[in-house]
Image 1 (spheres, rainbow, N blue to C red):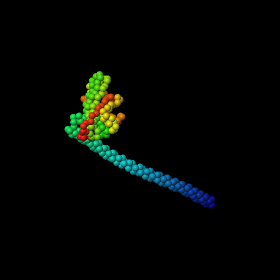
Image 2: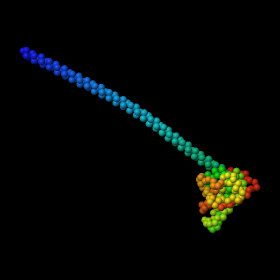
Image 3: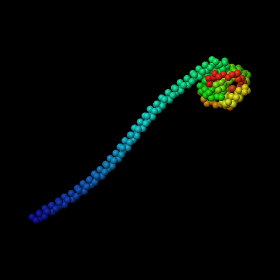
Image 4: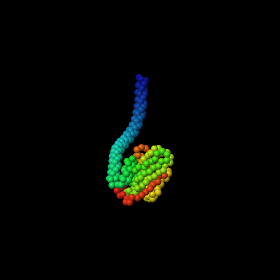
Length: 274
């Protein structure tokens, strides 16, 4: 009987120890699980912070993109407005140019009614030159003076020549009659007739011409008057020469060797349109 009792006691004691060990193992596992959970929580919190920062950055980028879009849209609107304004300004300039041209032609016609025949012809020639190249107006307006030859006739094949008469203008006055002669040796491609104008840059070059013994240097060439031809033309030794063919294209534009005479009117004509 005692042996049996000792056996029960031993079993009881063994069961209690096993239970204690099991409880300790469970506690350790639970502690580790808690620590892992806490670490996971911290990682999740960090991930949340990063996600929040990324969201804020994305929002800022979106706002910046929206502002850039607004600026681009406004720039497009402004550019369109500027284009419309430029177009209107161009149309206004065209109308102003047409008006000025009509006014110039009207002045020429008005003054021509009272001019001597030579002066009348010269004014008509000026109108034709300006119609061929409107930019010639800067020469007519800025030159110290200019000699206009409405018609210069050229010879035919072989030894030919050229001759013409015209008028000298300066400071709004028709000053006197001018003559042109040119002896040309060599091939002339058919008889030609053309209008010629000589602009004088300075008072000195004008005074030299008025002496009545003026000659264009052999290397001087004239510029054919046509739209835009005078835009980049400059004076050479105080003069600039333009020609306008009558009834066709000129075969040559050489005016070198031309000699000029000048005879002042008894009274300068004051009805110049310039």
